Structures are given as structure tokens and as C-alpha cells.
Image (spheres, rainbow, N blue to C red):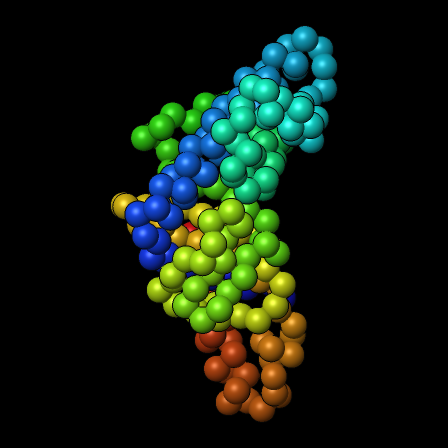
Length: 200
């Protein structure tokens, strides 16, 4: 079973700067990918986010050396988001939607800042989380669920940074016993978790 949790971070000023840089890199990469996808598609090619990722990686050292200090997943996931945006667009076109919503460029200050990293790269220790290329950052709460972290996405809202994760947990953790009273508690726990994850 997969459960989600959103955790508020408490980064210092240096860490906030790094998180902001990661978000800016993700936004730049998304826009770069969107522009190149459009050019390739209009030229009769069949673009993919994986192809764009290879192309970007080949250019990083010469065209975008400032990306080297970022976790690799930041640019990787941003291009995957481009692929998802076009998949959804073509699906809506196929369904005959009057306004299928062609993917748009992300403008600074007009979109929610954020980025993703590889879930397995995170380490939790009490009210701290270790982020690739950044180190340990204080959190407002501990990780609730033991298990494999499948995804990790950071977002900035009203001046605060949050980490939203999905964790794969075993059924034995969710349903440790079969007695009725504990089953009710388990259902309530899952309902609260679902409500929290839905707002992310």
C-alpha cells in the first residue's frame, strides 16, 4: 500500500537559497524541454522526455555548467513532467475536448515553485531529512511511515518549504491485527492520511 505525507521544512537561509535554486533549475528545464519538444514535433519527429534528457545531459557541461551543483533528479523529473503534460494534452485531444490545454511555459512568480528528487536518495533521522547536495535540514515532524520512499517533491508556499512524499508500506503495517477495534483505528488512520495527501 502507498501512503503519503507532507512535511514542513525548517531550512536556514543558506538552505533556502539552495532550494530556491533547485526550483529555478526545474522551471528552466521544463521550459527548455517544452520549447525543444515543440520544435522537434513540428519538424516531424517524435520527441520524448527521455530523448530530451539525453540531449540536455550532453549540453550541461558546456551550456549549463551551473546545473552541475543540482541533484540530478531535478532536471530529470522536470523533463518527465514535460512528457506527462504532453501525454495528458494528446489524451484530451483524442477525447475531443474543446480546450485540450496545450502545455504552457512556466513563468517565475506565476507558478508554484518546486522540484523533485529521487525518493531513495533521502534519509530521515528524527526531525531531520538529508537532501542530496544539501545535507541535513530540520523538519516540523518525523516521517510517519516505515517503508520505501517512492517519490519526493518539494514545494514553496507563502514563504515556507514543504516536502511531499509517497511511501510504500507493507500491509502488515497498515493492518497489524485483525480485531475489530484496531481495524476501526486503522481505517480512521488511512482516512486522515488520504485527506492530507489529497490537499498536496
